[in-house]
Structure formats: structure tokens, C-alpha cells
Length: 368
Length: 148
Image 1 (cartoon, rainbow over the protein chains, first blue to last red):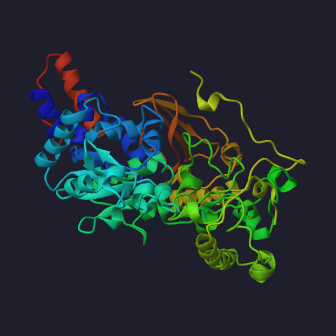
Image 2 (cartoon, helix red, strand yellow):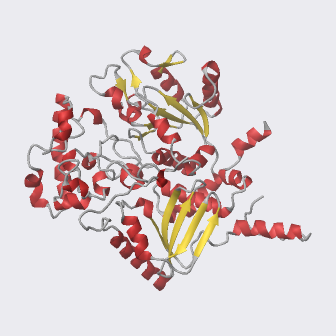
Image 3 (tube, chains in turn brown, orange):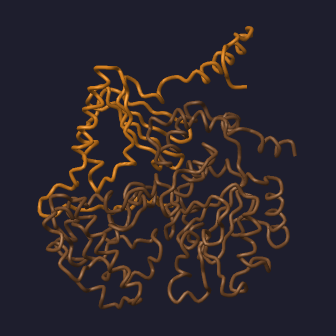
């Protein structure tokens, strides 16, 4: 009991020292944490000072209408790592996929964490919430809506992990049979951070948790409630293939000369220009690669309604008009081209969404 | 179990083109500016390469351009870290790995000595007390915060 109590009252610095981690090791931990939070290296001393004093926050993780891909993303990330160390320093008091307890014991753990940490705990949600019929998704006989409202009432903040929780995601795709909505459609009186992606990048999930652990506050958010440090720039603007776009060099099919030379995948359906996420820099699988580097366009999975934007391989990114003719006169100003293309695509996206276009196998072979 | 990085998948250059996306040169210029600042004002700079949108081949190209200097230091704490001076004195490559040898941070540090190599005051205070204990001497009072 005393050990358990100590575990909760120790600061992160004390806990690491007790485990034999030197100050150098702690600085290394802080360096990797700052990098994970997308903070500049000059912030490492500030991160070290804050983490030295950080105490374990309680986290309650609720899974609603979801595929568990978000939890898979997180738990399949490299281990043991900074992420796992961060997880050693939060108190994950409820996660019905990961916890050993089940049934009443599991629900009792959630209620106890809520009571003991009133006003201070974080709620992480993955999955959307069905409103058409509460019976579509329940946990221990409690509807998702009721559990969310009850759990969020005493929380410090809510982190909506994955596009389902952030924007409704796949369950929200037309015709939305369950009446799925996002967390932010229900929670209005608490700060909600959207960590979108299908799934989100694991280091982005832990980056947000680390930010709360480090600074005791949530990071700055964009208009869609996503952390600016990770979602502040479009995939297109951070893409290493961007110079090819600016030069008008495009792959026209997945096996042509352009594809082999690594040219821009814009005409093959890449949603990079309208997608905001950190894939281009953070990458996936321990920084090994990311979709565009593997030769496939971005699907736009961190944006609202990405399932209903008219097909991953055509609709939005293969404009009916000739993009180079429409905006080609601005070719010297790459950013302007991107902005013009963005406008074109927004209108096409609205059309596609309205028509609910479907992708066929033939579409995969289409070129512009 | 085979690690992801052990799988021999690599992008090959076509038609004699170099296998990189020319992103190393701008970073070399950034390093140049940082080195000028270090030489003129003694002000160090750190560049986080994980924040740079490199394409295939860019990182190898940059590390080739930086070359190898006289010093390689290995730090063993929470996994191994290799701190290597480049062919340009004052320009260091700091490669932090976890216990599974997976990279957790890659920095270019432009400094006389990278911060992580320097002995830390908390570790030195702890070392002083351990040494005094070993020699059965009274512990020296140390001003400021130190480990328990």
C-alpha cells in the first residue's frame, strides 16, 4: 500500500532516479519527449524542469463505436520507448481493451478514478457515439452517450483520439445508420482536443498526453480542435515530393515513369493539399516511411468526412479541368498554386460528398 | 524476431538520378549559419532532424556530406546513444536510440561539446557522496537541489 501511495505521490524525476536513471538519461528522455511533442530542441531545459516536477495524472480511456485500430496504433508503437515511459507516468485507470478487470470490477475502477481525481483526470475517447438508438453500442449495459456524459462531468479535459471520436469517422459515413456523432458534438463544457487520423500517429497521441503531463495544460489547437504542433501544416506543404508538384511533374499511374521517379501523386488521388497531419515528418513504423514515401497518395484520414469525399483515387484530386492550365500561370508561386488547388478541391469535395460517389476497381486504373 | 529495419527494402534510383531529394543542401546551409554563430558569439544551436520532411536518401546524403571527425562517444542510458563529431569541428551528430536500438531522436548539435556529454551537476553531487561513503569520509554539504 505504501509503495502504491508512493507511486502516486512521486514526481516523474524522483521515479526515474529511483529506477537508476541518471540525469543524463533523464535529459535524453526529455530530448526525445520534446522531439515527440514537436517542440524545438531549445525547449529541452524547460521540458526537463517541468517533467522533473510532473505527477501522474489519472487517465480514463473510453472506447465506443471503433475498430480498436487507435489502441493498436498506440500499443504497437516501438516499445520500450519514450511512449512507454510516458505511459509509466500516467495512471491509466480504465481501458476496457487493455485492463485485466471486467464487468463490475472494471466499472468500479472507472468510478473510483473519477471520484478520487475529481476535476483533474483526463478522458481519452476513441470511437464515435451512436445517437439513433442507444442500444447500438453499450458497455456493461450503459449506453455510450450516458457513459461519456457521466465520465466527462468531472474531467479536466477530453482527448478525442482517432477520426471516429474527433469527427464521427467511418461510422458517420453516409448513410450513417447508427446516427454516429463526434465527442465534440456532445461535450460542450470541457476542453476537447481532437487527435484525428485513422488511426492517429502513435507519437501524436502520446505527444498530447506528454504535453499535459509536462505543462499541466493542453496544447494550442487549430480551428478543428487539433493540436497545432502536429496539425498546423498540410501534408502537401511538408511533403518531400512537393518540388515535383511545383515543377508540374506528376505520376499518372502507379507504374509509370513518374511513379518510379517518385514524382508527385496528386493526380493519383493524393489528398495531401487538404489534409493536415504530421505524417510527412513523424512518419510511421518507427520513422521508417509513410504512405507517400511508399508510393501511395494520402487518403486524408485526419480530415472530417474523408470517407465521403468521392473516392481515394479520383474525385477530388483528379480535377475535371486541367489543373496546370487553370492555375499553371502561377506555377512560380508554389504556395499560391496549392491555395488555388485547395479552392478547386473544396468545391469538388462538396460535390462529391453530395453525390456520394463510389470507387470501382476500374477507377484504380484511371488517369487524368 | 526480425526488426523492421532489418528487412532489406530500399528505394532504387532510376536513370542514373541521385537517390535523394536534394533536401540535404538547405540543412547544410542552416548548419553553416549556426556554425558562424557559434564561432562569432559562442552560441550553440540544435537542429531536430525528425522535424525535417526528408525523402528517401536525404538523411544518408546529409550524413555523408557531414562526414566523420575525430570523436565518437557512446552513452548508455535508456538505450544507447551515439554522439559523433562530424568532419566539421563543432558540428555533432547526436543519435539517440532506445533499448531496442530504435531511433528516438536525431539531432545535429552545433556546439563545443554536446550538452548530453557534459557531466550533470546532479550526477556529480551523487558521485561525490558515493566516493566519500566509500572512503568513509564525512559528506560534503552541497548547495542547491540534489538527489536524495
